[in-house]
Image (cartoon, rainbow, N blue to C red; front, side):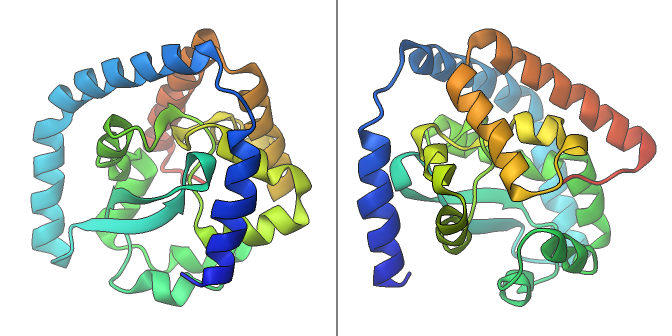
Length: 223
């Protein structure tokens, strides 16, 4: 990572995020994260093993995708997912963001990867990130450092995403039909940061579950 980018994120934005005090609700949400990680972890072990074997047989190694993302307080972490794209796809998709990235990504999905993405089963390995405290079940989606720097320059409030852990799902995802820009997605993220509660957390998880079922039934994708 370029030193100037690290200085921007870890210096300036980490300082801003650190100045924002933690709330009691964050401890309650962390307890829920650990509870659901334990429950889903046990239930999904056989599913994860079957997916890993299927990927190994159909598209070979690596089975897991490992990508550096920006977490709470500007700290970097390695996000895990089951690989859904062709090998080295990230090097080809790296320069793109937003609608152009979505369009180009379509041609990079493996046959199994497209199904994993639609079902969101590709994100099962992120339970490890949640267990480590790097992610939460609900929060702004993780973003690559370079894109974070670009968006933070364009959207002055973007740094506030660093106040909470990134999430497996979030308001911007369950309401995806309403946003047309990164600014509108950010507005959903900021709503979560301001109004986060146990009720909103649980409601978002339930909405995500219904959305995934709807995608499986209709064959839809996800942003």
